[in-house]
Length: 208
Image (cartoon, rainbow, N blue to C red):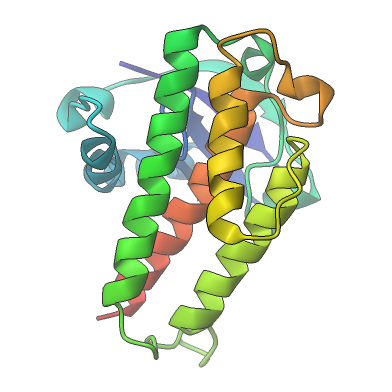
């Protein structure tokens, strides 16, 4: 059983795991979003494996329990999970903060590995659109600069910035409160991991 929340926009719906940062999928309605979450479980399992966190693919996708339903926004319809749940605002224990940071770091490692192995030119969509490999990599790095600012992090170097983001999230097992800086730690880990994972899978799918 996996706890999820549903974020419903006017044109797109996201289903996101509460405890597995980055495991979020979208669809035209709730049913389609949950189906997409189910089918992506084996791929997310590779993220968990990279992190060294046990993830039973069959059990995780066997049943979803909706813990919250959130109103979406233009961000949702654009294609990103943009609503902060009540659960996201709850303090993280030291162990949970470490787990969130470890899974986020794993999503980056998998993304970087996929980028390194992918061809520079990716297969185009049905209408000839879509960024190539290096453009996607630059987009992810640029977005992380914006995300980092939501945590009070302002670092130019991309690698140092990632380390600083992880330090903030791990610090949520202590006295710090990222909610005061803009994003709660749990939401930050989910959103940042989702973005890296979403583009990881895009590159993989468009490399064939």
